Amino acid sequence: MARCWRRKTRDSCHVDDCFYGRTNIRVARGCGRLPVCHRQAGLGGANDGLLFALVRVRAKANVPHRARQICTVKTPSTAGRPTEEAQYESLVQCHLRAVKSLRARRPRDNCVTYLATRCALGMARRANATQRKNLAVEDNVQEQFVDITSAHGAIPSFMVHPQGAGPWPAIILYMDAPGIREELRNMARKISNQGYVCVLPDLYHRYGQLRFDLPRRNDAMGNVIKAAYLSLTDADINQDTAGIIGFLDAQDVVKPGPIGTIGYCMSGRFVTTTALAFPARIVAAASLYGTRLVVDEANSPHECLAGIQAELYYGFGADDPYTPPDYIKTFTTALDAAQLKYEMDVFAGVDHGYCFVERAAYNQHASEQSWEKVFAMFKRTLA
Image (cartoon, rainbow, N blue to C red; front, side, top):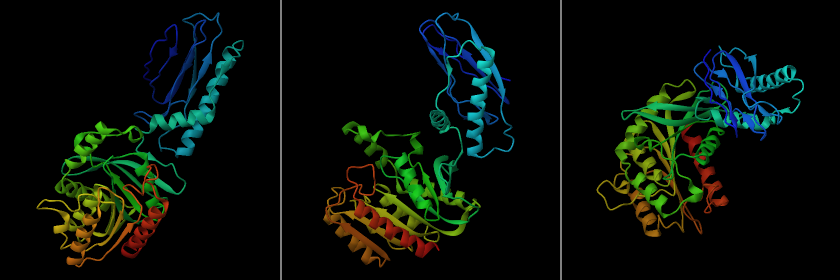
């Protein structure tokens, strides 16, 4: 058994245990200021042992400062990785047994309390968000955080698919400029609920882990976001896409063959360039308010459309400053010249980011209409 803990101070008592197999809860008694000893817990560790939720003890004023009570309870076996429900049920039961044991040993200290089960579960979930590879949070989907290998290195990604053995067609969801966040994972879940395996890669993996607190976005943050997305090249995304396709081909839950893609903002460009780079695999690509499709560069996507075999969908907002009317007109002319199969919507009175429910620009009508057409295209091409 391995243990480690921080010694308590006069103002607060914090005791942390590291363990394997058996779980010790050390409940430290405080001093006259009625400190709270608490211990966060979750699931994980080298042997996937169960940690406990919270044990909260309010000590009487006359309890000596160094006095402490130790109670030991045995955790369930984790040899076969129980289901998430079983893990949390075991966590709560162990927590309750610990409190009961403590009361039995110190019957006069009847002020021992424990936090609400819902709070304990919530903290356990948060504590393990970065530790667990397999994370099922919906009744109808299975989620995983995976590292996808590529020529550049590992790509941290979020993968979600319907419950069951499958197989299902695959969709790659390319992020927008602000990067990975729960809003995008919810969109991946929305796609999965339609019967697809959806992979959301972190396209900023070359720079470490970039996360932006969008509600507090200001000019300085906007400059960082702009620098991040402008540094990505078409070759970078093609390299990542090759690794992602290789990963999908190795998954039993993925239906072999064609795949679809969808991208927002900066990735509206990338779903177009990857459709050109992988014509034998990408059969459907959706671009929502895609930027930099028309640029004053030699490799501008609107000049490199010939060779795309995929069916395409483009959605724009008429009031989007990043995709003004002449931009849309130039790109439409290029699509027609290349004789590609595509559909385009330009929504009147709609701004950039109209599909993101957490943005002020969200437009329910335009968003739902785009989703409907995207899912119809995926159904036609990936069935």
